Image (cartoon, rainbow over all chains, first blue to last red; front, side, top):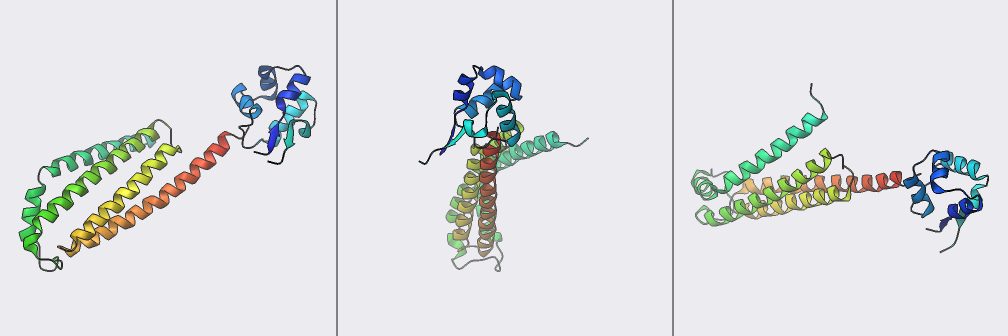
Length: 68
Length: 155
């Protein structure tokens, strides 16, 4: 998929673990892992909003479009 | 009180009972063929001579019986998966696809036997029609599996 999820980069910048982010956002670590590994087929705006809020970033910092 | 679990249990029991009937009938196929050869009315006769219908009828009935057992096995697997709450999975789609092909194969066998007894050609057409319906159902299931996968991977 040409949409790349750079969640791990932002998490590393904010020094936040997967478990901590999952708890703060209110999703399971398994779902966060699906998101991080790029296996997710869609992201809800509500989830994106919470992730951006917790990581203090913009959606564009997490999602990137790369032509295949 | 009647509920989904009881309905599922009834379906499984009926499937097993139907398989039992199919196995039981298999032992009497030559008797049935012999009886039908002489009891068939003129209206039900086909274009070929009734004196030559015994062996084709035995073969048709054995093939249809085997196909019925295969279809019932697939139904049993399908019901087992549904009882484990695994409804929209690729395995169930495969079961429905197999059932559809089995119905169509049984339809073709019946249509061929329709040369000896025209009523079987009609039964064959009904079986093919049922196979077609099962195929459409399989297509619906296939789409549902895709939608479920998309839903499961929406975070």
